[in-house]
Length: 241
Image 1 (cartoon, rainbow, N blue to C red):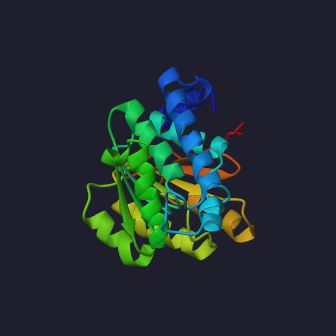
Image 2 (cartoon, rainbow, N blue to C red):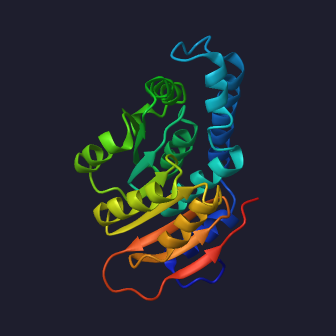
Image 3 (cartoon, rainbow, N blue to C red):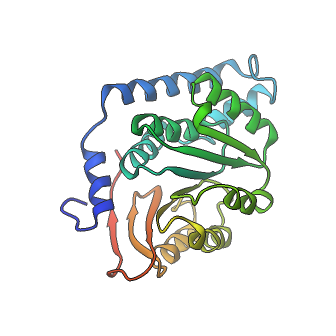
């Protein structure tokens, strides 16, 4: 992605290559210590769910440290003021987003999940990590809550979709939300190589008319949206290490 004429992509590239300040590294280390505690102590402190389910949500169902750090770097590089996360789990990826806000000195996250117990654990995660002032957890299915959330907040300039990993649901939600986002915004998709359907969804979305640029991180995909006249979309690949 080096020497890219698209300013947002160039900023992302520079951020991913440039390393993180020590304060950011400390925040990431704190989140990972907390994840480890969730995975090991079960429901001793979080009575909302069984130890087995809590361990699964903190581990397998949450983004790994490598991918979560990418989310953090993208938030720092793109500097979104308002982020919508579709799929909360126990708040690990949300904590990375909110920590990116802390680095930027601005930003608010709204995160949605249909699992009430997971929402309760996520709220505790944000409180324990001192990130609750930047986060709002909404319980409900996407169908029940997304329109309410979008209508009740300033336009979101980043959406992270990490739930309902089906081809039609992914493209339908993108098409539903893209016209309602900030004029210059971004859409981050998880598991774009999960199966054939998700690969097709990614290829369909990145070639939509409103997409100014896309970055294929191989496990995740990012599209940058721009309304009005634009040059042909630029497409990049960037391997996450």
